[in-house]
Image (cartoon, rainbow, N blue to C red):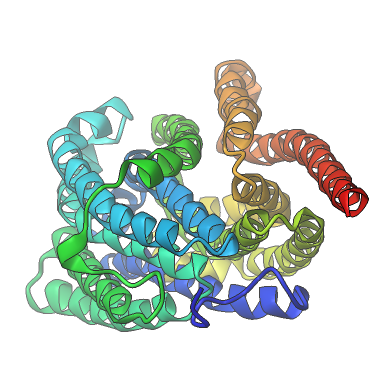
Length: 466
């Protein structure tokens, strides 16, 4: 195995995990800047201001529903590569890499077709208010035209991270993110394209980041090097990618289903709570920056676990879990407190023309940001289980702890007149995080104990044989 691949199976864990995580956090922030730039620029300079913010923001849960399945599958791709690297199986790494990229191209193409055709009907199904429906449909259709490069970047980045390279995706998104913001300003201020302009800028940025990640893969000097002329879908790595990725994709999609239902419920409140849709959209976008830290530590836990599982080092998996849980909890508490304290000025950046929308955005920040570290430690449990190759367990935990619970909450507690409020909807997030975390921790503890016990028994047998 080439020296270019970082070795997570030996040496100190804490310092390696921190240095690996920081670029992923920054990468996630830059990805979110694509959407944040859309919201801020149309909110400040667009023709319809707060309506444009609501139009762009209310598409997030629906876009997530349609894309998160393949994003989840990219996690299966990364784990497949990490297992092969940890086990020092060069041929398996080569086959996985040359399967992942065409799989991403096909998946992105399907998403583009489905998203373009069904955007408006799905927005109508979500009870999107009439005053923003057309704007939302235009934004979504253009965004989905860029799904192929978006998928290629995410799958390509998963390969690089599995090999220990978390900085290069950051560099590529830094460049494409700057281009995205400049194009946003050009399309909105100069060409007066409003939401269509910011969507087009995002699509162009996706193309740039995808090209850059492909170039990096073709230039590598290890088993992760991509030869474009030899790309094909190999059956063995595809089966493993699907076995590990499908449950992760289903889990991500089901998360989005519950979010779509919550967004639909928020949309239905607009006549009673003026400005709640725009305020919710702005606050949700701000909170996504905080959740980037959680996602980064989850990817770290997943890839470090993946390599160590490939090498049979389950003793290190327990240490990885403890470090990731502690780091996520501490960072989550600090970030949550800071974002809650500055909630009103942050929301005001997005919505300069509606005090009511700012008020509702600030209230959402209070309900979600302070306890958001709970969602972070839940994500760590998910990441470690996936890294161990046990994607089905977190999927079922999420189905019942998050999706089923939130749906039941909406059709029971939320229907009680005195609780038919946005606050009641936002409270369901926190309770569902606690339920899912508790379930996943029980599963993880049992599985690690079983694996470590088996590992010790194998060591004893080898000593006895000698």
